[in-house]
Image (cartoon, rainbow, N blue to C red; front, side):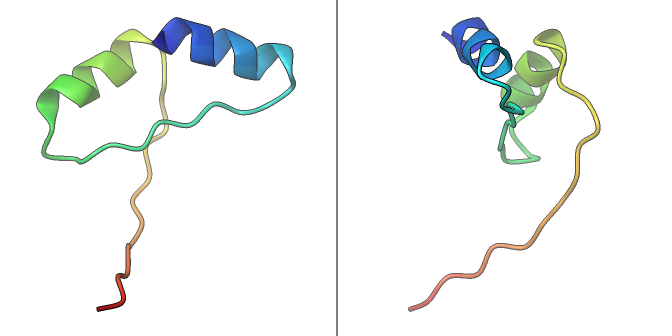
Length: 48
């Protein structure tokens, strides 16, 4: 599934991005295995 997403994105001139929780080590390992790099952080705001 993940490889399909990446290949589809590349075939349609899109940049695949992966959003994950930095405390989720399993997701980080998968991201690295799939070849993603250059992580960046950002803030998320929620309205209550």
